[in-house]
Length: 441
Image (cartoon, rainbow, N blue to C red; front, side, top):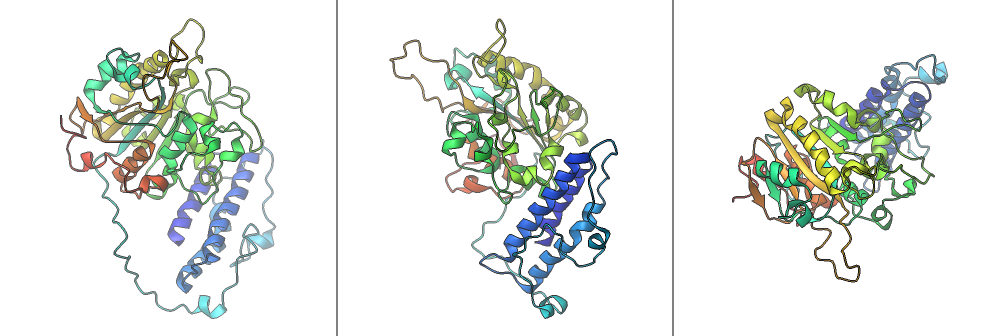
């Protein structure tokens, strides 16, 4: 437990180095609240803790002020941040003020003279985690789908994806969405979270879709597993229009995204307090314009890259300037520009996997509104491309956003989160571990 909590604290301290002034103060305060909240939850949980585990949790609480003291001080030009009084900062063994008052005091003898710890053998019924496979760099592009036939069929509206890229990869012909909205599918793909009424509506009221700090995401797993991650969002900017990291509405605000621009519904990472409060979002959730520089060197390329362009380039109809490519054509043009940059990067050539997926469905309305839809809008398909796969393959197994999460988790030897751990959820990770194609043609 102490090791896991210490990693969370290190995440906050590292992110603090990127911030100054008011943002720095907010990060420190929220990190202390979040971390001590996790500790308090463990200490007061119904199952109880062993004396050694309880001592470790308390020791971490005592170490927080010293760990945060190593973060860079805020710049003088920014709003000032007042440190705690000297007597509070120098008091060895004291619990920070942010620690919940509900944390019970342990008996002195339990903390001062702990009994030798007995190794615990994991229960035999717990499944073993898969070994990490040969893929070390995953690039996941999330777009809006016009429907399976209009994407991969004979009359495709996305010729680059269906005719140029398709022969280089493996088609997941039975990949389906959980719903038509982008946020519900995004939260499932990075957190294993089931769709709700709010997320199915892309949650214009931001606060209604925020997850508490103890709800983890794929990004949290990667960090604690010592892997790196980046989310690249198209046209993400502050209110003044300047590129900015981790942009999201205020908790009590209703978002009104600009036509064709950035929208929080395309960025599922900003809905997890575990990333917002502990600094990961501020450090790793960045504008799409930064990706080109990160691709130049393998050691600068994150192990996991989540790529979501703006509303126009994602393929949502009616979001592009008049007279330019719109809908599926705009998404295909984005792929034609972006995918070659990924495929030519050192990280992809070495051990990469590109996943072209669809996180939303936005098919054109039928010519006859009274007629029944010709195809299920949730059947969208997806494509895998990797130097570790035999090209021009097809995998007809049933996949969905939970499958994406499970597959990525297993590729990195991590335990599937939430609904992704279900017994009926398929994973394509074994194709890489076994060194075979995702399906035999």
